[in-house]
Image 1 (cartoon, rainbow, N blue to C red):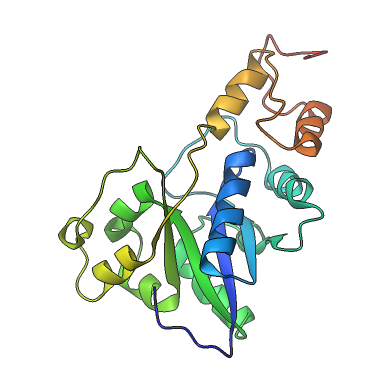
Image 2 (tube, one colour; image 1 turned 120 degrees about the vertical axis):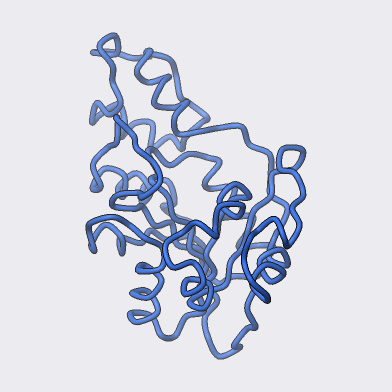
Length: 217
């Protein structure tokens, strides 16, 4: 991670589609905040992800509302609509430039998984992005393999700084894709998402397939 400025508020940023947000996302946010001593973690739904295509993408308004419902009452977490309000494809380098302009009092820490770390050299204007924020990478115990500085394909000093920012997360085998599938197949999603998110999905009829009409469970 980059050197700290003690005069700035240390804020984590966890981005993604959150389609829908689930307990795995919340565990990541909580773990990073505790381990890295962040004041707050912002969950930031993207408008359009550059690297993923999802045929059953809920609207930006629905995904943002589900995040708000999921973290309600937790003073350490907050929802951030920056990428949704900007519109278009959500490139991290453009998001972080806008964030630093809007929040000059903050030291942003961008939160990613080990799979994203391995592909970071392919991200849009990667070296510029690395100068805009620190990175925290969450490693899944027993799943992610170790990686060397050479494996990141980034010039010094970035590779070693990124590896210094790797922390051990919790193993939580939950995915948004699995949740969407279960809803479409009329299967319960209780305990995979917060109760308020579950009720919102049902009330709005999100992710319902042809066999998932009417009462679900």
